Length: 164
Ligand code: SME
Image 1 (tube, protein in one colour):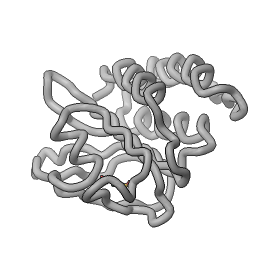
Image 2 (cartoon, helix red, strand yellow):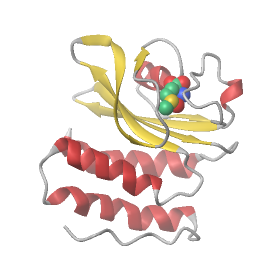
Image 3 (tube, helix red, strand yellow):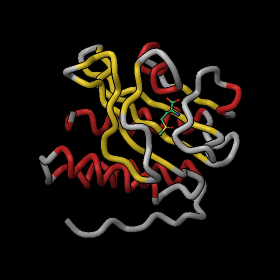
Image 4 (spheres, helix red, strand yellow):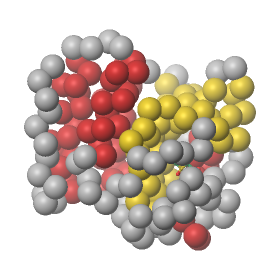
């Protein structure tokens, strides 16, 4: 695989997604190693958006389905396990929907893995009607994520669903 073309950080958000989604698809089309693919996907996301401080996947732990366990990510060291019930990732698992949090201080039960986190989006990965993982994205700025992020990250997840 050739190195991915760096997406110009100055581009508008919609334009970044327009380039990023096919890039991510091309990243995974010639490789069937799950860890390699999911790791590169987190990197592609992190280095496309300058206001993302942390991006990674949490997986439902197959041997303990009451917990999420940390998967590949880009950013600071994060909580290894999250008991499903509290926090933004749990809300996404339980509601089976994307959760956009403009201000984490106003989300009851938000779990701080990074004290500098200010806003967050969590997108569920749903296969056969079950949430099997979530894509969790944090920002150190308030109000980073909006409806465009919700729609486009959901499209991105649909495009990589085959690797899960
Ligand atoms: N804030 C998340 C925890 C994971 S970290 O953000 C990486 C939550 O409330 O579930």
